[in-house]
Length: 450
Figure 1 (tube, helix red, strand yellow):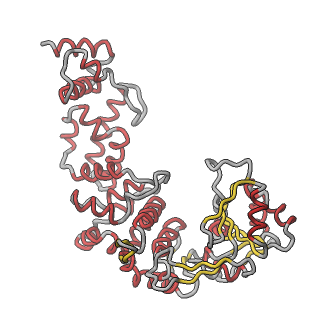
Figure 2 (tube, rainbow, N blue to C red):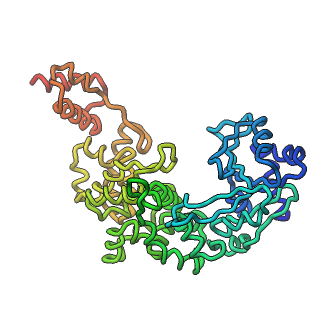
Figure 3 (cartoon, helix red, strand yellow):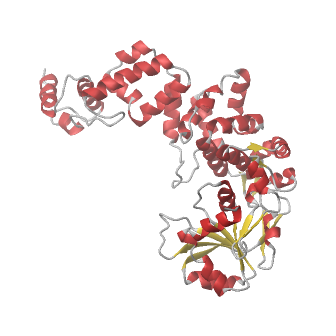
C-alpha cells in the first residue's frame, strides 16, 4: 500500500475525524489538510491521537457555523485563527480537542528576544498550504496531507529526514531557532522521543543560542524570563521521561546543560563518570533520572535548580508532573551513608519507610543505577522476608494492626509519643512478633501500663 493510501485509510478510520467527508461535501471550494505531528507520526507508522487541521479557501464564519452545529468549537486568540473542536458524542476525558486553523503567516515582533509568543500572526484563508508550512519548526513537522486530493505535501523533504532519522530546522536553522528559543528544547525532545539525531547546522545553532535561554527582559513593571520556566520544565521532563540517556547526552553536548543546570555541568566536568548512571536509566521514570542528575547538589542549591529549570511549574493535570518533595527525599536518601549490614539492623518501621512502598522502590532503583549492588541486594532480601511473612506481593501495602486512636485509648497524651508507640507496634508486626490486632492490643496494654 502506498504511503498516501495508508495515510488516507488511517484518517478515514479515525472516529473523531469522521466529519471530514461531510465538510468537503458541504464546502466544495474549501481545502482541508492534516498537518504537523499527526502527519509525521503517520508517515513513521506511529499511533497518534493529536490531530491538527488547516482549512483554506473558506470564510471563518462558515467554519464556526458548520462546526458549531456538529460539536463544541472555541476560538483560541482572536487574531490567531485557531479553533479547538470536539465532535458531538466525544468526551474531552477520552478524546483530545482537534485544532483547526486557517492558513497563517508569522513574523517576529519588533524587539523580540525569542519568546514563543513574540510573533505577529496573520491568518489568511487564501494563503497556500506551502506558505503556511514555511513557518513550522522542523522539516518532519512541516508536512501536510491534502484530504480533498489525498495527496502528501512535503516542501522541505520531511519524509527524507524521517528515513535518515534527522531533526533539521526549516530553512535557516539559526534564524528558525532564534525567533522562538523554545525550539532548542523541542529539538532535543524530538531527538529523545523519536530516537533521531540533530543535523549539524541545527546543532550548531543550538550551541550558539543556548545562552539565550536565560535571557531576562522588562515586562511592564517586572522582569521575566524570555523563555518561561514552566515551558522549560515541561520540555525537559517530557524529554527525560522519553529517553533519559539521549536527553542528557544532547543537553551536555549542545551546551544546554551548562545553561540550565550550571552546577551539574561543573560536576560532570570535574568527574566524567557523574552522568554515567543516567545512561542506564529507563524511560517513563523522570523522577529517577532527575534524582540521579541532581544528586550532587546540596539542599539549597537543589531547591534553586528545581525552580530555575521550571521543574516545579508543571501543570497539575500533566501526566509527568513531578513530586518535588519526593525528588528532595530521593536525593537525600541516596546520599545517606549506610552499609548492607546496617540495612538489616534498622528497626523494621524505619526499613519500611526507607526501602518499601513507592518512595522506597524509587530509592532502590536509584541505588541500583548508582552501582550499589550489595546494598540493593540486602534491601531486597529483607523486603522479601517481610512480604512473604504477610503474604503480599512486591510493594503491596501491609495494613497496620493498630491506629493512633488505639494508642490514645490507653491514656497516652496526644503528641510525638503516639508515633513512638505506633512505630514500636509496627516493628513487632513486620518482624512477625505480632500477627493480629488482638495480639497487638494486648501487647500495647501490657507495655503502656508497666
